[in-house]
Length: 431
Image 1 (tube, one colour):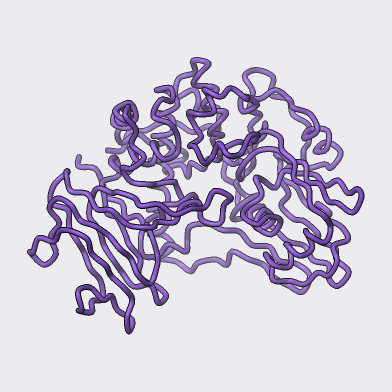
Image 2: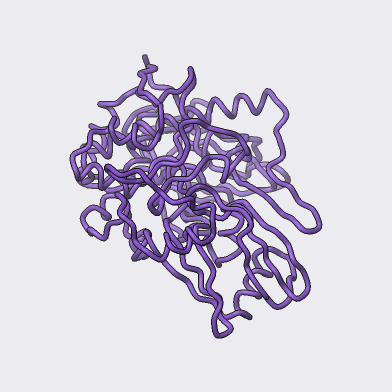
């Protein structure tokens, strides 16, 4: 069976510069070289003519297009711009008074880039295979979910009252393509991330061609994060309040699976203050380099971390990031935690206003100029300072990338890695 196609949103701007090499065809005419499109009067201006959309179809595997100044790591601490190269076809559409560039490519070819973008091509083969299966599973689950959303009424993803703001961020905002290219979905940075030994990645992807995780007659929504901090989180703590049987609490260890109740504050303080055994509790530079690109490695410790703010500094930051004037910050009080200790609801107490915010990503967004590493933290107040002591990097749901890298280095097979993180799921070949 021929591999299915996927559409990926690459960049959204009012003006986009790009370069076409190889054979790209628009209206039966071959187009090459440096090009520019810009938004004008609700349409796309290209070469002085206005279009509703443009589709440059790739006619061979050697054709490559380059998009200038693509923003990566949007709103994260490593955010930057870079020129990126892509295979496949290129489409431009109008969205919200801007132009969106969309790459259309085969799923297996897309996955080669995703795996190379998410981790090093020198990773263990079993880790690469595991990531190929979960990336394929997640992608196909999102495509199916998008179809379901188009056929149904979308449920609101927020609750906001005078004293509470609970919001979660998922993929329903991508209505004109399947997934985006940034960390909001899966990191996809074209063929520029394909390293010298990318054939290693290609082997992992194509040796698992068509394989997905399956549960109860459906493809698994295979979430993953950089570092769970020692125990994985439940789906409902981060997104819709629904039970997902394969995305549950997993102690990230080889043998003893005992774990304190991290929904309780005293247990969280003790847990984060220590460094309990876990697959992802590693400082092995060789293993970490398998999962972390150069800019990811600008962060030195993911398993346990701390960040300190002056009280007035944090007050100003919360005001800026939330748009709410709490006044001078008095306290940060965890009201509800998930099974990994991640805060789901946090009460912000100020001299002007008190309000509960959630879920985990909203908390991370408001308490940092970019995104706090995770919402698994406890608060220490001293000398007019707020110190956040935390664990892990990311939402912590599903596969822990650093933990999986350690498992691969220890000799676990890719299916053993997957069974560890996705409880009760099995592998199925669907094409």
